[in-house]
Figure 1: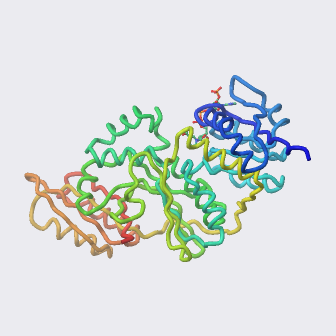
Figure 2: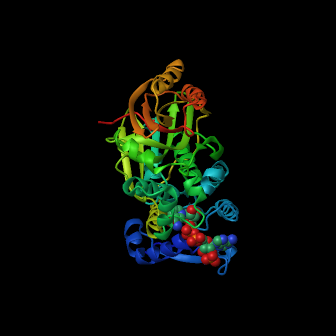
Figure 3: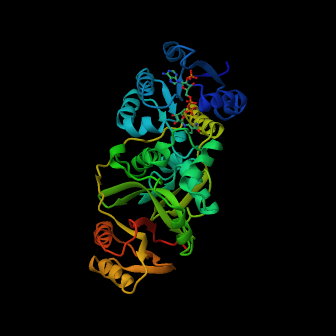
Length: 409
Ligand SMILES: NC(=O)c1ccc[n+]([C@@H]2O[C@H](COP(=O)([O-])OP(=O)(O)OC[C@H]3O[C@@H](n4cnc5c(N)ncnc54)[C@H](OP(=O)(O)O)[C@@H]3O)[C@@H](O)[C@H]2O)c1
């Protein structure tokens, strides 16, 4: 009996991830053969200065896209799928922005499109949501899906550093890019949450459906005050299903100690998946890095060669809602005089917002009033905030940050 044909892999991009993937593929070729029965071979590598896409397309069975961005990655991936090549990509923007078109093309061609490395690096969240939990009726997926911002927030909380200093440190250590705007502004996490929501709820969630905020306005003293309430700050992505509606959001928010995502510090990622049938599962680990991402890409290649077929067709039409409930932390700099707290409480009460804890610090003629609210309709809280913003004893703009009230004890 003749040996099985090798599996020929074309690699688009040889940068941080592409280079690491090429090394890993060579080093682990024997292991891939042992698992799948077929030895991997490189059919060609494309970069700006090297290789030909047409030649790779002609000679490859699997195309691995590690260029990034949407142009020319989208065109290459569509052409590969139409030529009935399986595709593996680490490109979150491509999947978040063009998922419908790409999945439909893959389905029509009868080939696989895998993208485990696009969200949370080597943590196998896509596989778990898409395959292991495909019948679990997920109600919520929440996560720390951006390591840069988690590093910056951990640094600010741990050392009292300002946002700008913590960002510089992240850049020195290679955790933040020279232009960090997509990370710190929440756009990177939004793309990842669009992908997770699509898979979790079997719905065609688009990037425009995700509301997002970043961490640029966070002040170190908010982190210090909140510590006294047992709170730690994360840039959180939350995708929730409420019957026939879903919401997908990214925002900085406080978590109580005991929340499964609260201990995740530094440039790490973690994703928590909830459903009545599984209660809660949390997966955590390194979210980025060339070697880690390459390992996730190779895992997808192995799955394809081993013949595992994922289901990624969106099946349900769900409405996106932004009318949600949340708890809030509120920081007010006020004149230190009698009646201030009563007036703030009155504005909150008028809008049916109830206070869970409050601490006041005197600072000469001024005072800091730091409060944590119970969960309420967000629009009620913002109406109260508008009223509070007009009070004459305020010394600075009020600062509000969401709080996840559940304590998971
Ligand atoms: N870096 C990470 O830690 C990480 C983590 C998770 C996911 N990802 C994703 O992985 C993908 C690759 O990221 P990366 O960090 O490896 O990027 P990178 O270091 O910038 O490498 C990009 C590669 O693509 C090639 N390329 C760019 N434009 C091209 C074009 N028009 N035609 C042909 N080749 C082109 C570049 O060619 P030259 O070599 O000629 O410049 C380079 O080899 C992205 O989708 C990224 O979001 C990265």
